[in-house]
Length: 385
Image (cartoon, rainbow, N blue to C red; front, side):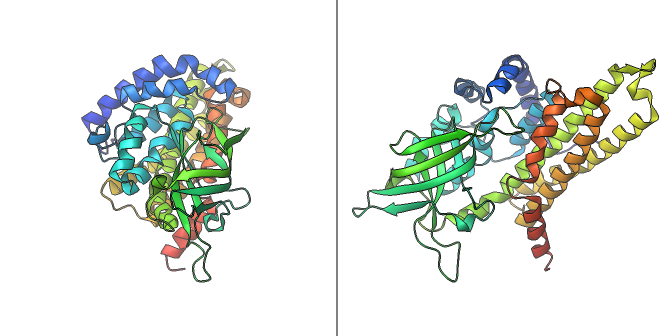
């Protein structure tokens, strides 16, 4: 289908990014995949290209473009090439809105220029062992010192994307107990310097997919976080998390759509090239029907994602809208990628083929950023059920 969501500027950026990926990522990707991490010295290259600075305000070294569409182009091009920028996926899409929306001018001066340059990498730490989607149940604490100069941070986080390479981590912690009336009360956000004493990176988790994304366990033992690194107001952290979740879920929906579109592209190319019984696999009616059905689903995802991008840029994407997008796109992409893998036969199960990696990478889309079950709960509540 003809798309109208992108302008000539987006398409020019796409061409530049595609050339960069071919030159700087594809030749090294197998090594990154084997090592389970993207080398940290790669990220300043993205900063130099301007990838990290698109949405960073001009006064802090960025382009100051208030649009998520460029992030969508990045997702599409990475999926098209069957590669990833690793844990940096959260650096801008998840972390930047907290800094621009909650940070003081002094904080922005300290953090945003390095963020845009790829020299100060960010991650965000919400999830804790044993709590999962129940963010209000977090146990990590941050106690203010008697003189008010710092907070003492203690606790642990898990499933932290970008946690190994991060220079700063936005950590959610309790600064006050929950109340009987409100379990969400008492959570605050801190931008924590990963070089502080007591901050430790535990295991880099061994995942079935997203192999180049450094996903880590973090622990905090009497970490002294300067009071100047409190982000926003004390005890209001949960409301801040809720404000930014729609963009996170839109990002996941865009990623799922991009993976599904890439899967169809990979499957079409493979079946046209592969011969069996003297003719191409693509010439069989079953293959044509399968690819046609997958293409129709991708078209539906594309329309949904494009509408979501427009709503988000207009400031009109609701929590329920984002939940619907994430639920539909992640579930549909799972089906498309599975069917495209089937068309590859045994080779679809071999990791050197992009479809195999897509299959493994895609599975987490229905879990992180809120499970499909949580999305259904949000949608049902919006329906008045």
